[in-house]
Image (cartoon, rainbow, N blue to C red; front, side, top):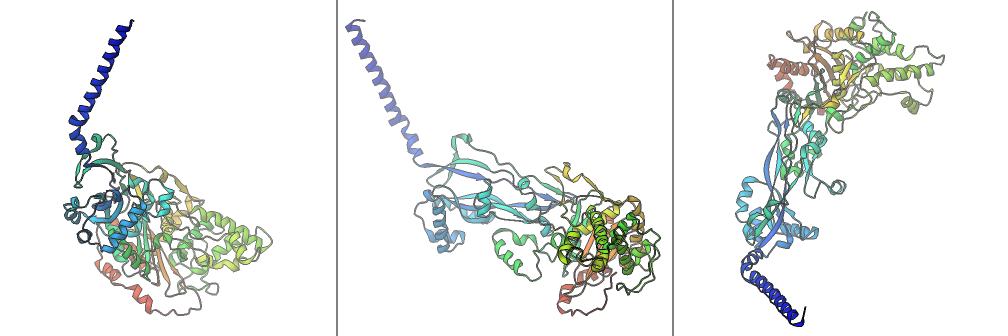
Length: 617
């Protein structure tokens, strides 16, 4: 290419580049000017979309726990412009000093990230606030939900929500400051299933704090995933009646479906309205409940551990029969020099012994279990006998926590050889040291849930499923596979017929200790117990199942400071059985007597009388 040609090419290139530059300058200054002017007045905001927390239903799909919408007032400190502080304080009903402190805390946390200024504002109240938010750049509403409890029952079973603490935020990246988390009950155990997954929406906001649409048509948004619903085995009618019957009493009720292990009813008394721990009043109300001397926050159904008293005699009977140290026709005299007892004829069979709850009889039964002459030393012989007895007890779910889907359940105590060696020294104890265990006293402790599970084992003639509250997660027809494992006790099933007959006599025959639970149309099999209480009147317990043929319900009722098990615990159980099996109550006078009894007030005035001998029934 000659010099002349190169000159024209260079001129053409300069002209082309100049044209492109001029066109771009025109676009920026004229065409794009309007967009830039508008963009200068817009801001991008990240809005968290909180999922709806899973609902909780009873066995008939009636709502136990629902959601109600609320709003948090948020602030992004970097976006805040000078505003009328007094006016905003009046609008959201917050003192000016408090508002300034919250703004300072938000700024210290992050100038660019949203912080909560006022939380859990009811929807109707926020509607009145939102029309004024255009006056306050940097402030905006964040929707979320609060729990509501339409039936106002089952506080201990359901649990509640509380703001997550700093430690949890550090441990779990899912949570952020200001989030809520389940505390206690199902809310805690099924937290991950019910909480769902948060979503995010990026929106454009103008200088008047009004949303002007999504950022880039929502291409960076993520959808929130709703939490899964829980479908429980709870019978709402039975739960409500149980709480009514336990008003002004300390104790608990646990009812199970022995065929499945589903919890039908779980009552801890004293209790409280679960609505008290919802919203902005939660902290205040929690403090009041925590300081209450009758301890309404304490879950007696799962966490209380009591001497079981005479209900323990049924388990002793089964082990003794299986070990062959007695037969069904073994009799013992009611020798009150061995251990105190109420007045009744001596028992000639195991069925009569259970019916009349004879203390000396079961003293002798336990003696034969512990002293089987397997070693010349009575101390070593006792250790051998107790070790075998302890293995049986574990197969009944005692001495260990039952894996129920509720937190904080206790496992009680079934003493073993190591326990007594620590207490008395190795080879420092024998039957004479531990004989009180024979009648469910001494070192034996059992939680009410375990007592109900014993009743289920007796109903099933030797097996049980792990007790559980939730039958399905997400869909009512789903199955919780982990609760389909059948646990079988070490006792031969053939012995349970005799035990069931003895329990039938307790309720339905003259001389039985729970005649107050008898019903014409339903055959209840049960066993009363009275546990010594050194601080007041004795505790009463009643375990039972019904009907005798093809049992559908197994139950434990424990009433503290009430005396004899047949007076209070047994009638309460029979009313609940009638409600569950027939959906009716035919003895309103019994309901009235139970409801009107104020055993807590009676406890305060009771003076414990010293008794020379223990009498249990």
